[in-house]
Length: 250
Image 1: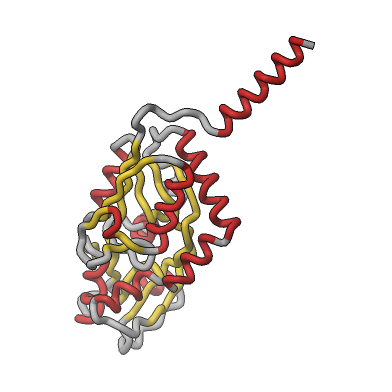
Image 2: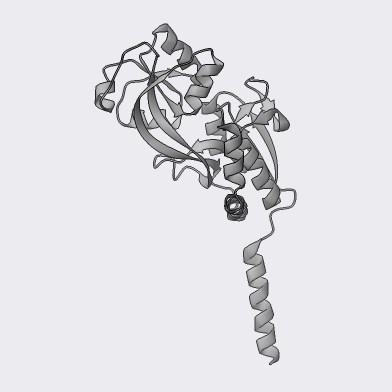
């Protein structure tokens, strides 16, 4: 009887430990993001912001997710994306959102999500008259893209020639001035950014695919952190929190 009782206590302890293991004392994550509206953006539209100065669908989801998971963090919005991406690859306990999860990136990070959905598109200026049947057909045009963006990486892996910009917003103006014919970007983020630059009426001439946005974590992030965050996000989704936040922006 006593041995059975001890085994039961041990089982309960193991279950409790599996449910929520301890993290190192003072554990804190460093979260990075960029201007990628409506998912994450600076309240004042600048290229640097911290904590409450950052807004957007993913930003609100991530804040709530960390609160429920009881994990401390700092949050900053910076520029350029290429630098944030490399920092997250190199620095333990760093995280980056909103990051498209692709086969090319799968082994580079640990993942929590999805936070939302986006589409990869080729956009043309309102009065360009350009039409394309497929990606091969689009290759005869000058295509602008954003350094180390997921759609950029995908197109480069397929050998598509691109004109690279350090800020995706630059491509909206380039399109308007005729410096590029097509803009490889995300939708709805691309249209949102274009409107912020005073460019409206973009035409989506080709939808390449749809993708999901995640929180990408440095590969050395403890599995317990990944588990807690994913559980919190799954709970939020079941409660309708994700849908409610998304509707507030779109």
